[in-house]
Image (tube, rainbow, N blue to C red; front, side, top):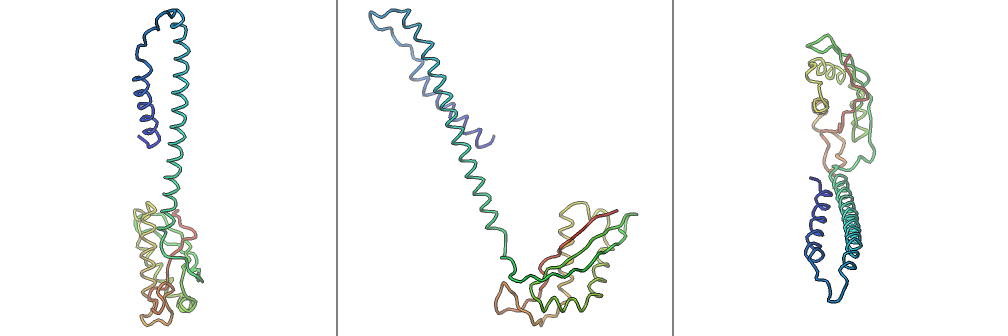
Length: 202
């Protein structure tokens, strides 16, 4: 049961309980009053009670909607806070081009176009000068994939992580570029993201 439905149910039960205690108790006809007059007044009191119930339920509904809206807003704010490290001040992109490889367990092939995101312009220049090695490493990795390895988005994310680790392993440990998120420290993993511009099997 959702929070909105629970609040409405509790509101109705509470209002009915209070009303049952005060409204539905048998009232004695005042001495000297006409019984028919008392009976004719009863439908009007019932209508008034029904209207009160409707007003109460409407108020409870509005309260529930307001609480749900605040809860969703808090959830969105929490998601924004937990997004991770700040974006790079000067992102550097290197397009590695398109790759087409046969999957090793089927007649299908994989086609993907890959771009890498780096944190430093010097690291970008270093990588561009070694493009044949980079492409050979990527082709070797992709050629080992099977159709089972590409069934869901999680597998694609794992592939991105593997490629990032292998490409970062090409960079020297005594790199001359600095880590943008840790001032004063050298960045041994300058490739921050692997980006697929296209990714499909055929």
